[in-house]
Length: 123
Image 1 (cartoon, rainbow, N blue to C red):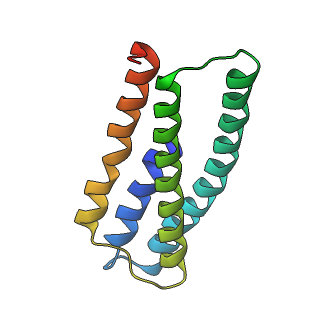
Image 2: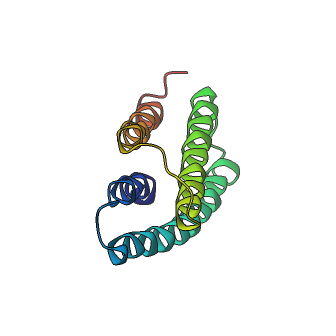
């Protein structure tokens, strides 16, 4: 979850580093690349452990399907952030810092919905 929260924040900093020396932007891009790699390994481990819970312990229910859908949304957002980072490294343009800041709040809302589904199991 830390990568999903922090990678968009790095994108905001890259978008706002237009007047800074090139070394600042290069450092932020390096941090973003390393964080993106780390996030891939963490998402992989979460997938393995989630499958163990699902198949070995037979956890099921409609809430689980909704949770898995929200996790897929979170994964798609993470992949989008990584592609935006790669586009920035290649010299492409990022969305405005305001749009990135608004988008930075989306994972929080999805996480709250996931936690609610796991704790309350409404269906």
